[in-house]
Amino acid sequence: MLVIPAVDLRGGACVRLYQGRFRQEVYRGDPLAAARRWRAAGARRLHVVDLDGARSGRPQNLAVVARLKAELGVEIQLGGGLRRREDLAAARAAGARWLILGTAAARDPAVVAAACREYGDGTLVSLDVREGRVQLAGWEEESVLPVEALARQLAALGVETFIYTDTGRDGTLTGPDLDGACSLAQAAGRPVLVAGGFGHLAEVEAAAAREAEGIAGVILGRALYAGTISLAEAIKIGERSESDAG
Image (cartoon, rainbow, N blue to C red; front, side):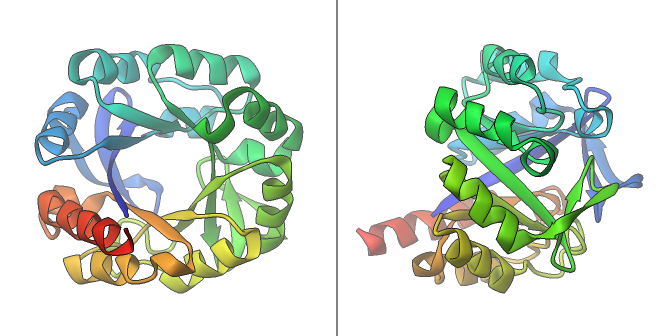
């Protein structure tokens, strides 16, 4: 099972938000320093979100992404403001291996289909959910489609992997919605990376125990920055899960 540390970007800084609320920062620091720390702990890839891009609709922190790639050589999955084909190409040029579509996935299926054709499994879709509804535009708007119906539609377009976040749990350290993630995986027939709410290693263990239900990885954010989860220990759990599966 993949264990992926998150580096959220706002104004060029690495930040963590409480429940995705832009007025509630709970951490601010240097993204390069954070990324070096996670790389040293054994991270295989980084989950990078351009929060400014998510709000504005166009990526705003690609220069930081390029620095992360150039200086650390780490694999990057990038989301936030990727709603046009030219922005997807720019994100790839900046060094992102995986491109995460969120708002575009609900509003413009043609962009998703084109991305799947061009980038294959390098296209990920993030479904950020509150009470069963997909949140859009930096979690400030809401889709009318239930998450599982949307996931089925997107899987039919060629999406191979989804990211599932319960936005009400994100940044709270109160535990992830593993049931929701597994329901999404079953509905779409695709593996899911689950994010939002992880606070303790026991929850990483619980996610690893549900790989057979579709959980392919976990994305850890605030718990790493707050020190309630050791990334190195979490990665060991993920590697042990992969070994057991093999």
